[in-house]
Length: 192
Ligand code: URA
Image (cartoon, rainbow, N blue to C red; front, side):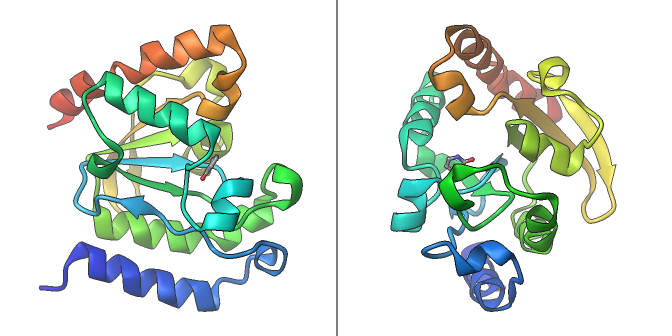
């Protein structure tokens, strides 16, 4: 039986070569998902930022540091979870990823999720949430457990949260995000 880690490594090699996302031409490199391939929880962010683009790892800048602090608040470490992005290449000047760029990286993310088969997918920010729930508004959906039957992996539990980067310099959002984040252990218990 090929390990999930090995399957992810092969997947990344394939898509790094075959992904047709236009951002590939302007980014330094692809930023693969990282962490525990056997985790029951996967976090999905938006797209790599400057630091991630240079170093090739997701969530290693200020938003990533905040994410690690929040993980600590629920007794988890970065090594316990898996983290990835809807778009694997940095958009210039950290602009929002365009619908075509999200679509061009979609199969890569789908296959990543099919290998990991997490119990819970935490969607960081509205772009990540819209990838699975195009009609939801982050202001209403944040912190709520959403169950959806997705053709690629059947019934799946999702938790949309505000993006840590958006909450970094906004006290109100920060408090809300910290409160929502603390719901994760109970949600995992509930869906187990
Ligand atoms: N923000 C994201 O959404 N992803 C990263 O990898 C870094 C910052």
